[in-house]
Image 1 (cartoon, rainbow, N blue to C red):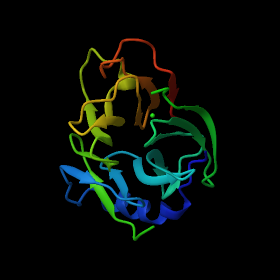
Image 2: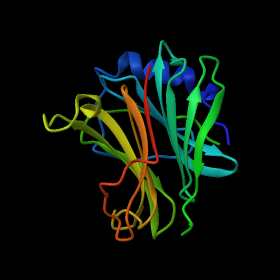
Image 3: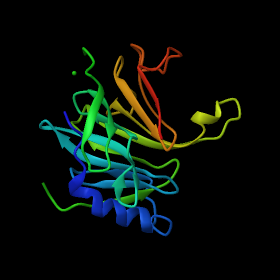
Length: 197
């Protein structure tokens, strides 16, 4: 499962250059091919299809290209979480891919900021949701402070699906972790925790 981004690099470059002046949406329902650029960061997320499955891939871009040796996070509709190491030419190497044991159009580009949400409605009972967070608490280690995008599988009521994975990416790190059976964040160690270059 390779994270493919070449088709939207030009659109991402445009959103990153103009994101400071763009108006954010509070909640954005994405369609395949849509792109989200997080204002004030290098984070860009793409509503993509990988191996025939829809999902949301988030990565770091600089000058319209993937940041060499950075990490990207992909969450697919079936709950599969993937972390890949990205190369400047758009190719990638999967470092982590795990699925929980439980389950083409014109591109639209959105600019988002902290507290905005975006995602896919998969069915009347399931969705992939992402939220832009700005963690500022001094009790949080410096590496994990700042703006990040966190994505998870959720019920129609936006509650995380029990035992599903979530991804979190920032200019500083990428993390994959798992909710407990009730859909709560646990204090257990993340499955993947990588520092960005």
